[in-house]
Amino acid sequence: MATLPVLPLTDAVLLPGMVIPVTLDPTTQAAVDAARATGDKQLLAVPRIDGEYGSVGVVATIEKVGRLPSGEPAAVIRGLTRARIGSGVPGPGAALWVEATTLDEPAPAGRARELAREYRALMTSVLQQRGAWQVIDAMERMTDLSELADSAGYAPWLSLTQKTELLAAPDVTARLELLVGWVKEHLAEQEVTEQINSDVREGLEKSQREFLLRQQLAAIRKELGEDEPDVDAGNLARYLGRPKFTPESAERTAVPGVATGLAVTGAGGDVLFIEATTMEGEPGLTLTGQLGDVMKESAHIAWSYLRSNGRRHGLDPNALAGRRIHLHVPAGAVPKDGPSAGITMVTALASLVTGRPVRPEFGMTGEVTLSGRVLPIGGVKQKLLAAHRAGLTEVIIPKRNEPDLDDLPAQVREALTVHTLSDVADVLALALRPAEIGTESLDGPALAAA
Image 1 (cartoon, rainbow, N blue to C red):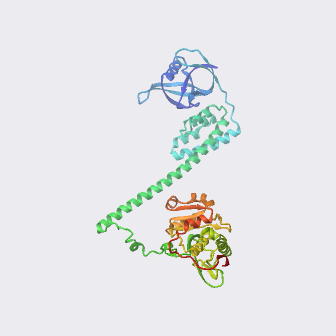
Image 2: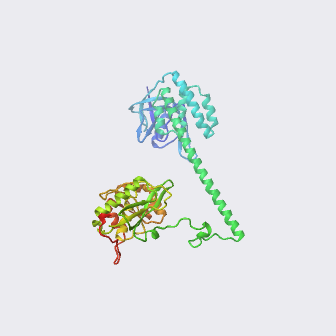
Image 3: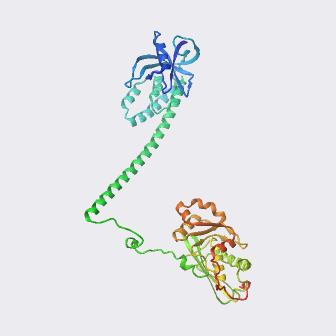
């Protein structure tokens, strides 16, 4: 046991065998002066992290005292051996003196030699990335396993906390196990960082290349006397050709009996027009448009709902006796199925019976029940994208599909007014144009007879 002045280290950790410079402030200057006053110039270098002293320090000797190139006073110290900090004792000068007990290091076991080989290989990979060939040579010449492990104190990528943990472990096997794990983590981080840097460089090179090409193109056009093309709505067709798709909702729904639905096809979302008309003949419902069984059921449910709830919606109870209803979904060559056209069919039929056209800016989707409930459906994102693409500005969807709106792109969500409803009565009140004076509904003795 020895009595030594304490040199607190706040921005470095000294391990045995290391030589480091220490900038001197009043506290460290007092420790250096006290050590120099003794014959052996020894002191105890102790890490002080976040204001707290560690329990283990390093007995160190002062190699040199002078000034740094910046003019600050400094001392160069060399670590000798680990020591546990004991009780404070009185001593000369302003330094803090403590009792220090040297820690004996166990002899390396076979496991330590295996870890040392693995650590050398890993550190060689790290140092090769930095081009530190001299350090690699020095590491290969180290035969003392404890010296090899403690040389990690120079590693700039190890934190002060990690170095303090190394200092507190006198067993070389434990130190090498820690180092192997840390180096593996560091190499993994380096790999990710290098990949990110590579992607950033590639993106910058592409942007610079595109910028140079644009500048060259502008210079060529200037030499040829060509100006940048001025593209607007008036001359867009000259550059892109005639429009291949035209919004037709306003034109199709201008007459009673036509409603705009939304569907999902193999190519994504699409707009679906449902047309209803009436004619003389045997009462009943004719369905065309290559409809599947589920869609046929939706049509019958829609018609049954209107027949049983006609008075609630202002429908003439004597409207359709002696007449036949024909419900058609255009694009007959394309098979169609699914329950989500239910509210569109109800709206088309109600429009036909009341003589009130459907508002052209509306599209809708949802399953309907005999009691008039609007049930949730799938494909909301694809359907609303199709509505936006077709120029619709308002959409009706089931109330229980409201969470699906979170999947929409922000620009589409802002462009559409989405109504989430749970009752067919609300759908009809919103989607049908107000009745105008002189608007005629269908004539006939009884809706229930149809």
